[in-house]
Image 1 (cartoon, rainbow, N blue to C red):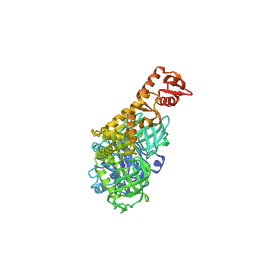
Image 2: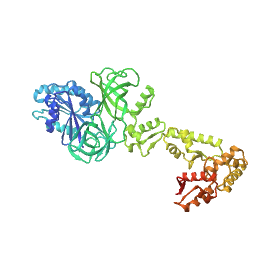
Image 3: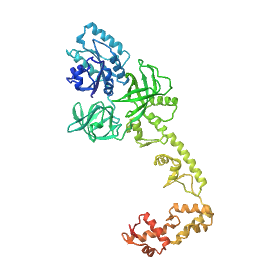
Image 4: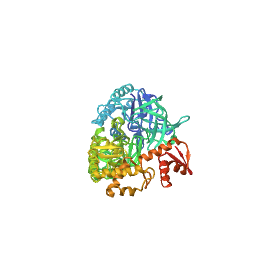
Length: 605
């Protein structure tokens, strides 16, 4: 297992020199860094199973430090023995704490420049500084990058702590916050970063979030070696085909194509540092997540009273630019001016329901923060009017398909039971009002009761009706409903059918047949619709209805003539039908793909 070690500490406390002494690699790669003698941007080195991210210590470059801290497994807090705790020591330490880094080692650098008493005093000051924090019991090792004293002890301490590090999540979708982007001659675009979850493989299709630009992985490197797959926790270089290096930049995230959606709304648990001023409603801030920095506005949730220093509260941050950020991710917030770190927190949700009152939203976020994955899924599904697809849940939560389940679409069980009860009531009303109607067409139910829902949702609900509701073809009825004809209705049905059956292809006018049915006009029309629904009668046009047996004989007559070309006159000769019936019948046969019109003639298909 490879461990990412991030340095932290004040400017000129020897972070870069220490990494160089440990690894033999100079992480200051920029000409300006070498000229000025200070780190400006992130530097990278490796040794055995350690990847080192060396961060700048100057207050002007804390944003660069933040870009490197997001994927760190353990922190190497560097404190110069001749200066002890300084402002950026404190700021870097708070950033590491807010980002949830759980392990670390303290290096007392420049130990060769102080006497034993001063070194002991520096140890005492460090012990007091980290008391009660994640570094309270961390090893404190005095080292000198110049003489090499303490380097072996420091490396041993790092290895001891590394054995306690929890491996990053391999089961979820891969995300790589990009901290560098460049072009290599003969290879094209390359991006680097620490893979914070999942794994990437050669030839995977990926997307640059939030730009929606897609690419394919041409090559992968970890630890400077080519690999077929990179895993969570690896410092990874990805060679991308299909984009230019100018398409990618620090702050973007590389992830599987089409899986996630960037957001501009982040609801979270936010901790305001004790050293900060109260956070006011609508305060402008700098929001840091992963390797990204965007401007944002703080919207207070429980009330409009400012958040007090040293306290926690639910806060919504409205981002000026979209980010790929998911529940559970940590972030850092800095003041807009002057730019100093004031707090950080954990994302709870990225798409809360609109128009929800502050108190209700506060309670909702409290429930979500404490929820298990299954409870979170159930809550989100219940909030959605018609349920949620598994794909939408992945985008909303970052969960794997295994966590979400096998179903492609999830419905709240309480909503489903309520909907089934309502459908049963509506069907009962329909049966009572239309006793001769066998059932209600699905499309009628779909447009009337499921307006705005996915087309397949009605079928999902009906599939769970447990025998109370029956689906027969395109009709839906209660299981208890059966059409029972009165004596005169049965006779009328027989009269209607026989009138069309005996007429062959020279059918009488429909109003005439209805008038001779022996029942009132309304019931006669209902009985006619039943015969059409049951396919005993076929409606060829608005005015013409034929018996199914006549249409069957017509198909049989044309079948031996497959491929033949014929005219309307030929058709009239074959069938004995007048032009009044021939033209509508031919147009019906065209729609049924029995024939195809070409100019003034037709071909039997």
